[in-house]
Image 1 (cartoon, rainbow, N blue to C red):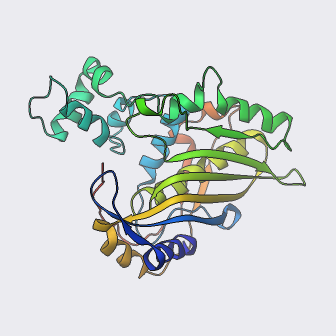
Image 2 (image 1 turned 135 degrees about the vertical axis):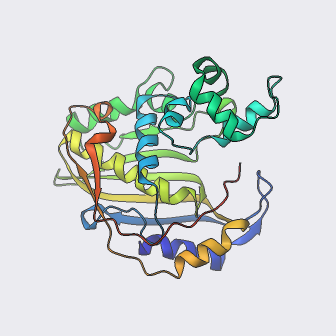
Length: 290
């Protein structure tokens, strides 16, 4: 996807080295935006293989309102594992278990998972219960009944609860937009913090999927996904991987097929989706900074 390649090049060429919370260090810039027209293909990166199963499972997990990693662990999705493990290591119950042993306990022991698999009031809580407001269903209702409103917004940044979250929301603010002819639905994401190598490819595909679901539910064609960034950074231990990735020629984008229509965004399940014609370059590994 050329937009992503241009973004990565921009940060490499214009960014400055900067310390960060994790101690890894970054090359960082502030403020950037690109656009993806979903009618021209689904924006799943082709310059490296991206784990779409994990992206879709995480999105459906957020939509469900869950904030515990156990449902993801049971599906072998590892996206959130490091954060509760770091919390567990600080507890009196920690006996030197490796992260693999910790995750096995989450999988096998529901009571252990309730205690140590919880992430706090992260995305699912805020989308579905923001001080009693189900933001997701409100936006769905308003897109059906008042399409030209400028208030189709979901906010994951809750200042009162942010300190109780394992990780404050990186993808924090979403707005939907219906075209003037009433035919197309677009979506803009404001992402306050963007890990360009590991996180952003997931974020692009996740919110493009959310846009496709909301368009399917509300009777629109898909329009544009607009991705706006605050602190956009490449971790120093990802620089060589990024350089390898941007040296690769992007391939034709795949398609996202939604096989079954539902009446509400909350009714979709994993089996309703299929990625077709995805032919990426090989995966490139990188370490998660926690």
